[in-house]
Amino acid sequence: METYLLDWANLLLRWLHVIVAIAWIGSSFYFVWLDDSLKAPQDPALQKKGVGGELWALHGGGFYNPQKYLGAPPELPQDVHWFYWESYSTWLSGFGLFSVLYLFNPRVFLIDPSVANLTPTVAIVLALAFLAVGWLIYDVLCRTLRKNERLLAILVVVFVCVASWAACHLFSGRAAFLIIGAMIATIMSANVFFWIIPGQRKIVASMKAKEPVDPLHGQRGKQRSVHNTYFTLPVLFAMLSNHYSMTYSNKYNWLILIMMMLAGVLIRRFFILRHKSISNFAYPTIAVAVLAGVIASIAPKPSADPVFDKAVDIGQVQQVLQTRCIQCHAAKPSLMPSAAKGISLESLTDIRAHAQLIYQQAVVQKTMPLGNATGMTEQERAMIGRWFGARTQKTSQ
Image 1 (cartoon, rainbow, N blue to C red):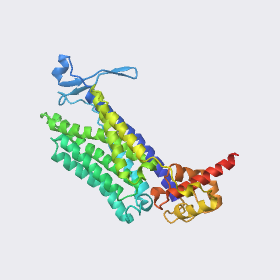
Image 2: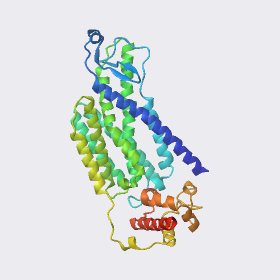
Image 3: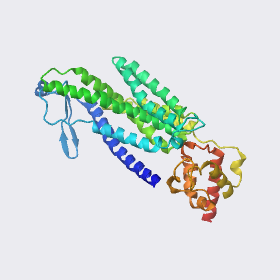
């Protein structure tokens, strides 16, 4: 029952996380586009009101005329929409999902003994430290180098690269990718919580008190907002990567993670420039070259190992599963309170019943064993593949 309820918690939190993340990313992308697409108003009345930019848009059968003030409008509007719950909900649901999946099962999801022999407590503390310390380092860099944007950008990139290397040398590959994504997402949400929204509240407070509005609050908020939009695509890749083991299970997974995030930044840069009517195709060209290089470098290579040419029977497969899989898929598993997904692989009958699933998870997607915690080898995966292929061929004849 505990595993069943955790599966439901996983599903509902994942669903919620995707919903609110769409809302946050959608509004963030829209406002970046809007800010970069505004034109100086020609109407003297708008100029007199302090409008610094405007545009006309057509959507859903209606015309829209968004306007941005250089500092603040002369009078505080009665109804002002604040954009912050999208960010907070995304982070809270993501952290809840991270807790249910990874922090509650550190032996299965966080720890890979072949990478680092961590205890569950140490693994959990280190994972949480990446989130907290990551934000603190980034924030110190921003505070120190606020006026030197180029150097700040370089040091933030260096920091993310170092953090990626460290995570991939501490945790299982799958967890490392997710932790780096969560670290950057924490930075994004913390930007909203500690800088963007407080700055906006100070602006509103100044207007209510009939005091001059300090433009510094808007400048700081804009800087953090721009950082957030560059972080978005790297975070999305890190979150999606746990479905594709060919990235995180590679020997140089930290470099793959960095290259994939770099491609995301370059693609986002292209679209930000496009908002300003600048078409610099060097950015997507380099991004595609980076992606092609990653794809080519981790492509599976034919093996000359004789094991690939030998016939495989179900007894050999059972030996592999007994060594690598029953720690989670047994009546009384050693790594979980009950059989994962309710699936046992102890008997030949169980193996035959779940043959398709075994092949899909262990050979095609390589997502099992989780984080390859039990060290299934490529030869063993190939053996299962040959057994399943021969079994399928016999069934079809």
